[in-house]
Image (cartoon, rainbow, N blue to C red):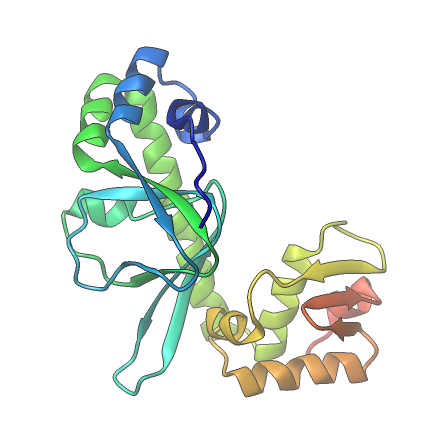
Length: 228
């Protein structure tokens, strides 16, 4: 991977989490961060490793998941630029419960627990932002459980496509899958075969077209109302 000089303070300053932090405090936090360059496929941490801080993605993509006793992989979350992971376990002082692996050449910032706790003592607004981020993550996990329990496979795939559709309405929206169909299937709690069958059915009903990783939505209203 090519070397990239990163101004840690400038990057942290652009994140909502650090909006209310003074420049002096930001300098202290930046001094306690570590840059982590990971090649595609590199393991950032494994389930059971100690968690003494959290990570922020500067560029690249990170997969959070675990492997079942049968050897099947379950993808829990896919983390992209500007997003963070590991905060909850850092506060609980528990080891990691998932594996983290780079899906592409990635650059991460690792912020130590001591730096976070020191800032929490200084800045109540920082504490509120940390809580807000953890609450969003919890809400997302609850939404996932609801989808797996109450929604059909077709509804899960359609929900993902509509969420990712950039235009927010109208026909002819295009969605570029940011990860492989196999990984996306696992993220939606489907087997790759079941995921492919859903896509084929939507294509057969002329609701979408699939061209590699690009999905073209032909009729967004019909797609939104499709029961499956």
